[in-house]
Length: 446
Image: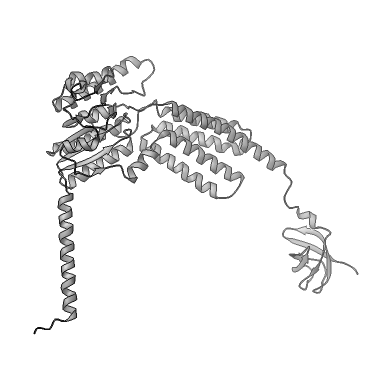
């Protein structure tokens, strides 16, 4: 009989477990691998959206997946971010891959910048209850007196851009041109009554009730639906100029308040808020002149420390607001692909003006508050009056040599003292004067 040792049994079991684990992981990988990479974008086109879509396309390319489905529902957004997304789509398609845009679920829409992204796709699929179109750009930075000429040039540039995208994918460019020149939108009410399909601005309409059903019909029902991660969400949040303006001014006032109420905590918090605001404005692609004006506004607010009449702080808030408004009226400094038309689909909204009102009102009230704090501090008596100890009596706790320094307990506290004569420890003394950090004492006669 062959004797099998315990060590051999353990070794065989270990190898068996490793083999089974390897087989299980290999099987899972094979079954989890789909022929489609699916990404869902349900937000405005901003730096976060660009980061998500471009990184998703890169992931699909790295994984060797040749079909990409972008589930799209957007009102539009930044022109430069849109153009960078389209550039990534073009690169993906140029490598022999297929890019699909699925407008879903019901009530979803691909408006403005979203329409250009959709038309850049090899295939546009919609489900009932969705829309596409309204792609007229918001042109900014037009010199005074050249409004009509410049506006016409930019509209023509974006129209040509849309036509080129549409022609490349074999759809009706006459209809998509109207999305830009006239702001036309095309609905897809039902499968049999889909204006977008009839006008040839999309390729397919599916009789699906929801997104998952549409993906199943596209043979991508088993694919994982990727959504924006933490980085993309952070970029979307921090690139909102409305939020950046609040962070910037809140940071400035936090630092300013800390100068009146030294705690260091507010200074750290304020510095972090200003840094986040500047980061967000940079990510958003805010014009350099607007950032400079906002910085000048902050400097004027700090000058309030010297002027002390509230005028500098109020002027600083006004300059800050002007700089903030220029974000929406000057061309973006964000880079865009070569040859792409310049413009945006982002504009000041009711929220923007509400934020401006709060910022302006908060700035003025903050200035008045700091001014009142300073006035109160100037008229407040010192918390400690060094001369108040003169005349108080105490006892030496060490020997005192004439002109030297000793210690004495006066009013239950120990002080450094000096005097004109030698006095032994325990002598009763009285404070005659204060010289710097030392008390001048004399002997109290019994």
